[in-house]
Amino acid sequence: MAALNKYRPIVKKLKADKKKKADEERKKKEAEKKKKDEEAKKKKEEEAKKKKEEDDKKKKEEEKKKKEEEERKKKAGQKRDLDDLEDRDLDYESLLSIMQRAYDDSEDLYAREYPNLEELD
Image (tube, rainbow, N blue to C red):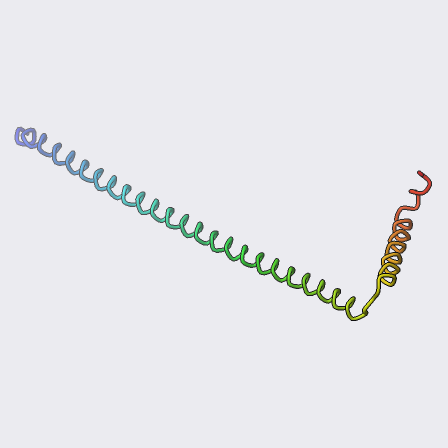
């Protein structure tokens, strides 16, 4: 019994050291895992940010192309209209009559859209 009492503090110290070492290993592994998770999260956020920037850039380019195409079509339409007028070789009187007809047509259209407007006058 005396021999057991003699070794009891040594056994307790060894068990405590073993437990302490296991706790240190566990904490070390948790810290490594946390570090890896943070790095993975940071990397994922950077990739998402980069992808978003690329998508925004592509979207801007598409909008720019679309706007340029619309402007090109608009300019082509205006040029075509001007060419049509030049081809007709209209004089001032003819142009005035065309404009008057367009105005009359718009008045008729407006009167059809808002028939009660004349009653208010």
